[in-house]
Image (cartoon, rainbow, N blue to C red):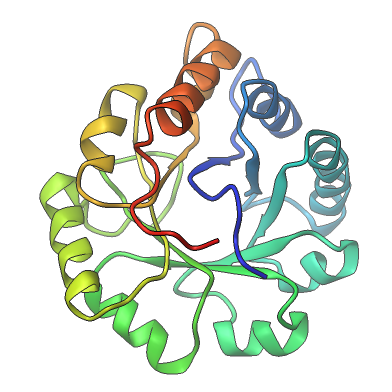
Length: 222
């Protein structure tokens, strides 16, 4: 499956005001059409219940629904795909379980990570970060900043690697234009949306930046 809607991704989060399900609803109402459910410490029961609720909302909005880490749950409920971190199930093994009809994303931090990943299997997109320090993820890799993204994109072009690369990690609305100018193909957001005064409007503003100003796409993958 080719990954559509990847240019703007929302990673579910929660705070004192909003639950994981609330966060997905806010992102969808703000125009985002790619939701990744990430609930690191949840029980399998709670994760599946939440996944089914978020999946229903994604289907109502025509959005892509990705589950973090959990390949078997992805297969069981028929989500659109799974995102795998460096310490999760290998992509090749996940592909054997899911087949080619599911999206598989891969976390990377360096160009070496990208080449190492491609030595064994080919994901549908790379989630690359963090851009800056963020509290939403444990065991954080070194931050990249703008120069880090420029260097990675340059290396990908030199090696003719045409897999979409999505920037993630501590990104705010004010960062998006500069990050996209580095040549990445998309942006993933999380806590910056929920921490905004009006999260739905914040997502709507970002949707406008990504889609209407043509900042999101540098290659034609469709």
